[in-house]
Amino acid sequence: MATPDIQQIGWNATSKEGVVAAGSAEAVAAGITILAEGGNAADAAVSTILALTVTDHGACSIGGEVPLLIYDAGSQTVKALSGQGRAPLSQKAIDWYLENGIPEDIKMAPVPSVVDLCITTLQKYGTRSLEEVLPPTLALLDTGTKPWHPKLARTLRRMVQEEQITSGSREQKLQGACDRFYGRNKDRNDIAEELEEYYIQQGGFLRISDLAAHTTTIEDPLTITYKGYTICKCGPWTQGPFLLQALKLLEDFDLKGMKQYSADYIHLVTESIKLAMADRDLYYGDPEFVDVPLPALLSDTYTEIRRSLIDPGRGSQEARPGDPHGMKPLLDHPGVFRPGPGGTTTCVVADRWGNVVSATPSANVPKEPRDGGKAGVTYSNRLRSLNTTPGHPNCIQPGKRPRTTLTPTLVLKNGLPILAISVAGGDLQDQVTLNLLLDFIEFDLLPKNAVTAPRFATAHHEDSFDPNPDRVKTFKEAGSLTISENTSKSTQKELKQRGHKLTIATSPIGAPVMLYIDQETGDNYAAGDPESHRHAAGLDNN
Image 1 (cartoon, helix red, strand yellow):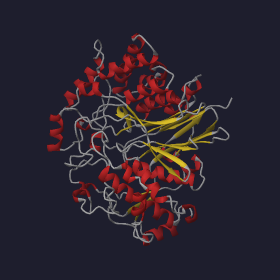
Image 2 (tube, rainbow, N blue to C red):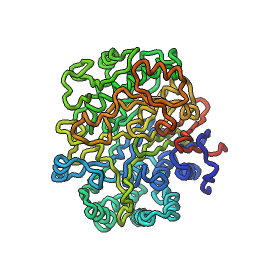
Image 3 (tube, helix red, strand yellow):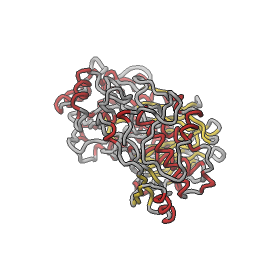
Image 4 (tube, helix red, strand yellow):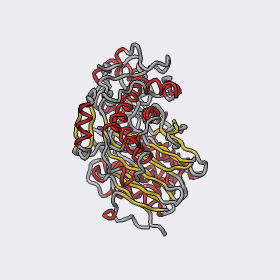
């Protein structure tokens, strides 16, 4: 099948055969082409993600990161794939960070993780080769005008070459391509050598040993049940669990009875977000390095005592982390951790066999330099989502994953996938996801209505991209609340009276894509917010 006409790709679509919603129309076309050729959701997601690294470059990059959630119809399970690069393994490098901070140059780059994430997804859940999913990306690079375009095209073609000459199964061939990129090939380590040369030239700490040690872990998702729906998130190496905490705080309230976008509704959801994000800022970090008290944070007992802090008539002006260890609503001595949007893109895919993917590619690529060295692999800023605060669970350590804002979502009903959501917007991501989830679960909005509905969010939290060791200084704006301009004037007035520091948004709050699967009819509905330049398409129902 020929590549879909880009001009015909809009912002919402319905199909029984498969749908894709993502950032650019070209990336959506890449995914749809793979589905049309018989590939599954994993294959299509990889093709979409790789194309996004070109079309949405700056927001994401081949040298960036991409957490991914997948529902595998064969095993009927959800898994979280940690496409997140790690800090350098060198203790000398970590000591430098602790003394000097995490600067806004190549030293903020984690190990590039997109390539390994894509290869692992194809190996474990896909059916296609790298050579088969790459043509849309290579076509974009070959017609591109940026200095790194021909360099990255050459890198990707060398990986395809390695796949072709590696003997064995499809999975082994894919591994050969991956090993050439990450420096694990004894005969041909040219790509990794070029990456290391670039890091050294620019003053970075990453080396081939860091590349070679990188793997994409496959983890069980964190889940809760909210009013009959199973919400699946990545672990506390992302901010995802705070969405689960917020939903648990909200579950006993009659949100539908409050009416959508009423002052009562917006106030309650916002106050729940504030409480959950205070715990995020204090407790979350890479669980391979720190003991995150998730069972306590998500327990019914802790939820109940934290819920009592919500004042229905007044917006909180303080950050209030709780004490999940002592089961107290407030931490007695939070110390320095208690304080007085980013570049990311989106991808969700569903296929005709019931497989579903939600992924959030990112990088926050610095504007200069963007040549990516000889390999054309530009870098991410994600190490700035770590900090240098001694004793903090998110303090930088050798080989540690930053606690990222990237946070895809899958939702099941009766064990089957029903929703997939991905949002761009840094600290806004799960706040916007919460808006969309409640739009659907409480108010029956389909994706095309949910992604265009009014939204709201707060900056009452620490900045996830500020590594300042004094966490007090990273707190953004106490008591703040930003709401879409089409929220009623009476609601705005009431929120101000409750103490919310209101900002009226004239541009989109976050950039979401969303898909819904009607398990009775088999229809897939996908949509991306057109105002934030999201796109969606579906296969023809033949």
